[in-house]
Length: 158
Image (cartoon, rainbow, N blue to C red; front, top):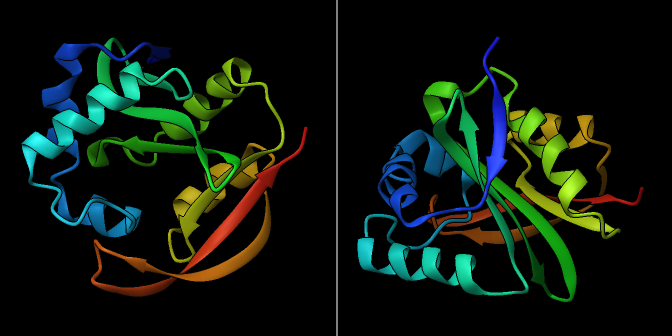
């Protein structure tokens, strides 16, 4: 059985993570991405920031030792939020669910919030499985789709 693990992000993860974020279907499902996901300089600045900002907890997700995505917790509008990204060829294998379960052992502060496009049923299923409960929806501009969409806001209390 494949091993899913978390580890700190390192410089050599940049190429794999940047490649993952070029997949059009992944970007569409994530919806809330940088305006230009092909801007490598901006991506490198972002990755440096999430690796060095002491208020952000970030990890690489590995699948049998290879980078399969990343997961992190950060402050947004005063709330602690979690977000993750899984390489699309690996969707549907339970990697996000297992990575989130592992991450919730590292980040123990509660409440913890998450957001997902309301039509991103896979991500919403992962969050609900981990105990997150929908709290509200809001309409937000999704740069990946070039329009406003409904976003579900979830919360984990325990």
